[in-house]
Every structure is written in C-alpha cells, then in structure tokens.
Image 1 (cartoon, one colour):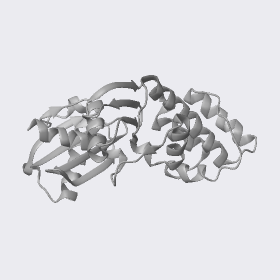
Image 2 (cartoon, rainbow, N blue to C red):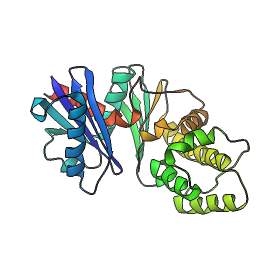
Image 3 (cartoon, rainbow, N blue to C red):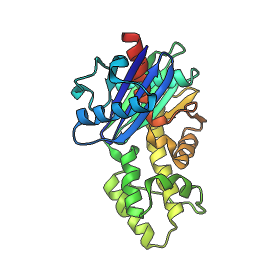
Image 4 (tube, helix red, strand yellow):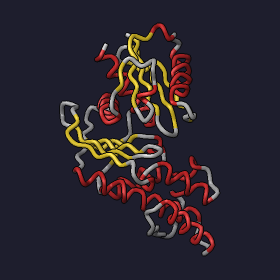
Length: 258
C-alpha cells in the first residue's frame, strides 16, 4: 500500500512516500506563502523520487503548522504523534525525541510501546529554534549549513548571555567588534541554544535512548552541545534525514488509518 505524509512547517515543507514499510521517496522544499501550494509542490516532488503517481496513494496524512489548509489530505495529525511515530519506526529503542524546527522546539517522552506519555512544546521564543541560528548566521556572515563545522574549530570559550534573539544578535556583533573568532562565537551560540532546549527537555524528564530530529539535527556542533547539556548521549535516525521525521510519521499513520 502506498501512503504519503506531508509536514508543512513555517520554514520548510516535507513529504514522504511509503510503500508498505519502506520509504519509497521524499522531498524537502522551502515553505512558500501558501501552505496548500507548498504541500502540493513537495508531494509532487516526493512522488517523482518514488516513481509513483498521485492516484497510487491510498491515504495522505498532513501535519505541521499548515496542516489544516491541506485540502487534499485524508487525515490530519498532531506533530507530536507524527514525530514520535517516525522516530520509533527508525529507532525502536527511542524513549525521548527532541525536535528542533525552524520556529519551535519539542520534547517528547515515549514508553516501550511507542505511545507518547509526556511532551512539551515551545513556540513562544525563537531562541531555542532554527530561526535563532539563521539570524546569527546572517549576523556573522556565514552560511547556516557551515555553522556546525565551524564550531568544531573553536579554540576559546565564548559565553552568550542574552536569550532574546534581538539582544543575542547585538551581543554577537559586539563580540565580532571585540575581535573574537567566529568559530568561538558559533560554539558559544550552540552552547546557549543547547542549554535552553535541554532545560525544556529535562523539565519533563529524559530517558535513553534520546533521538534528535528536525533540520537542526544536521548541525554537528549543536548535536554535540545538546548532548553535553543533557549529560546524555544522543542518537540520530538510522540513515534518514532528520528533517523528514514528521512527514515520515505522518505517512506511517496514514497506513494505519487506511
């Protein structure tokens, strides 16, 4: 059975095509103004990578910020359940999921049956999200995708004291003017962001194995900083781009709802 999951976030749109219990194709694109248009576009791209047609799909589940606007979806599901489902499918030993998206962060506790037992969702402050790193990359004049490797070159400790994105950006500019090295500043930013995300996760309790998902999970510097802040190891999804985890979970749920 062919199913599809669409995860329409504020910054990116993701789609996954499942053929029974196998990922047949997937795609990620920047989110446009219209969630419906973004969903249609990313689903078409995912179908192309899977070598399937729209009429082959038995069921579609939408999730994410724009899920209510996806008219072609057969069902809509919460991001929490979709992220839990995707992580457990890839890593059955998962007991905690930490997902960092473009404009929110989530901590999810899962029991040994794969059911969600507790979760905490933060979309009120950008300081623990991908947007925080995006703003800081612009301030530093570096590519967002280069921040992880640059942070690994850090030689001296830099502490970022401001939690607000606007004030932190001003602090970064001051550090640059003071002659501090860019890799040192980036590591300081990673440590500051990791501390905030870890505090959120620890407030509901974390249990091994801890899986990190979302596009930010591809940043090795933040991945390491979060593990250090939690004082626990993190694991990655098994051979799967962490950015598509929500869409993967949605596609899996589509198979159950059919």
